Image (cartoon, rainbow, N blue to C red; front, top):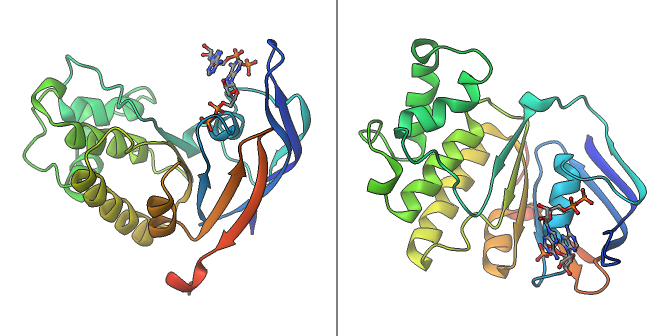
Length: 222
Ligand code: ADP
Ligand code: ADP
């Protein structure tokens, strides 16, 4: 079932730059969609529109199901962790902001840390962690509210190849188990083919969808 429909969406910034022009895109519930394309083709702009952080200048973007603030998780390239807070407290934060106590949060935080292979690091602070571990914390934090949709903007671009591959595997496993919807911005062909069931290929100028590739066969749906 369609979750989000973008109809002829365009975005021109106040400086006159057109980042998106006439984008049509449907995201279905449970999709793992990659937005693939070179730098500057409008991927992040599209993700910001989907996130509601910015408004289209033309066309329509419509959520077909109520997806409140609680239902969207974000993971950016910069893990943006609170530097003075422990791993546990960083993951707890989105729940804490919703009034969930440390004690109440403990089981769900603990389970997520296990899923991202960070059990035992609850009390570490970010500067004690590698880049990959920080990204794992960021993923756990993005999932802690059990969002319906996870938006990821080049999350692994700054990581070395081996770490990146491990994180790709772990993310895929989480998605296969939980089936939240993912919109994943990347300029890596490998990553998009490996992770997603649908690739939206974007053309550089002026930010249009060039092609859509379905790779459902790799992940049969039941
Ligand atoms: P990508 O994520 O594919 O690298 P972006 O969506 O970041 O592309 O950017 C698309 C184009 O829009 C680029 O030319 C970029 O410089 C421009 N752009 C992005 N955000 C803004 C903004 N807030 N104001 C002006 N131009 C912007
Ligand atoms: P909107 O018009 O959707 O509100 P803004 O113009 O407020 O978007 O810019 C959104 C964000 O993009 C801001 O954080 C801004 O600093 C950043 N930004 C501005 N210019 C650029 C650019 N050329 N490329 C990428 N990001 C930009």
